Length: 144
Image 1 (cartoon, helix red, strand yellow):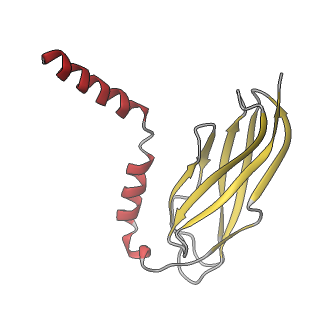
Image 2 (tube, one colour):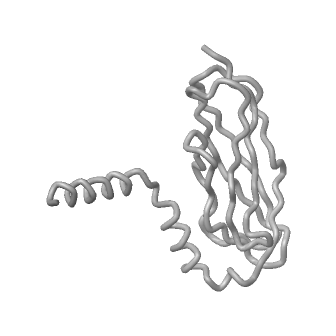
């Protein structure tokens, strides 16, 4: 029985080590900016889709999605997530963005072992209506 207890604890630690903590940061941001949750605004991206064309397996692709707060309330981004670990949001605004102002969401796509057509989504959770906006990276990864 003692061995099972140790195995369960070790498994829990291993699973905990695999998480990025992004969800915790999103919850903290929601709490820190709670006054904005019920004041929805809108955001518009210059381009919702970036086609990187063709790259060779293993290349890193970086892209910056520019957006504008098109509403009449401050915009707060709570979280930015991708649909897989190969596409990582590198940087995004952490402070409220005034109406009419804009910002950038920088993402990196790692093409390693992703040969073929690629379509990766990035979800932006903010005090918008709807609360989730999506941008995408598309292209094709060629074998080495």
